[in-house]
Length: 57
Image (tube, rainbow, N blue to C red; front, side):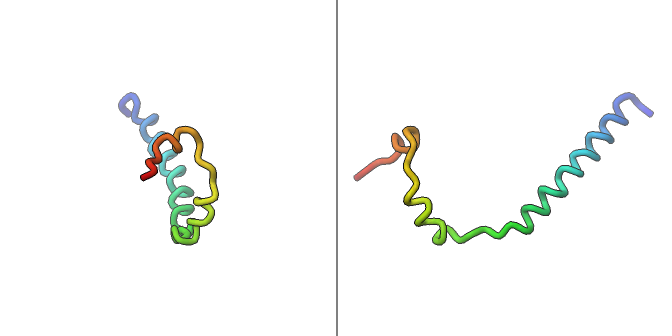
């Protein structure tokens, strides 16, 4: 077995194990329509960085 092959295999295996639960969470999570979140977002206060980027016409 060439040097590093075992480490590469173990890394690839572990990455696949980590991807499976992430993919399952993505599939089961239902995104709320943005119109449902609009009142919640509108009532949040702006922090200094965000407020600095807002242009009032």
